[in-house]
Length: 144
Image (cartoon, rainbow, N blue to C red; front, side, top):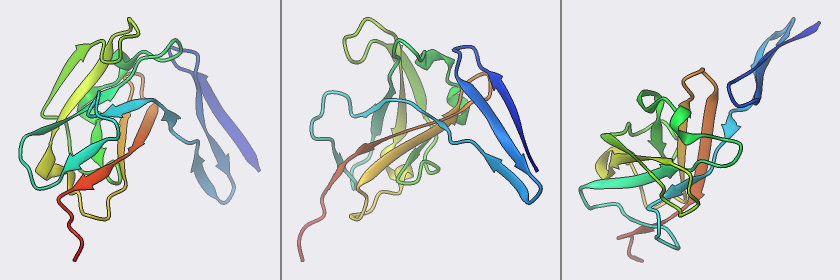
């Protein structure tokens, strides 16, 4: 037996879950565009440095980044490691839409030389799960 529970969030995204007699299976999180170190192409992270790494959640015609609850955001190789030290609102990519930039402490990211992707997870204020990712290169990993 399969039943679906669905609702629309504030932006018309269909969210919900499927219930089956064998258990509960959640729908995938809404994919949102992110930009790790905006303006840095390709994105390079210096794993042994201190300071903060900016990660922008980008607004689109279909998604308002300002609906993200910053207290739920996590960033790192699995998207569970670092929480924002602070947030900044502004147009990061020049599209006249206000984006949400989170600043996370580099040591909290738990980056290794094997890290190839930075993932961001979180929730909107209405409770919709979000996630985004970007390929990165880790600096400071010499060839031995």
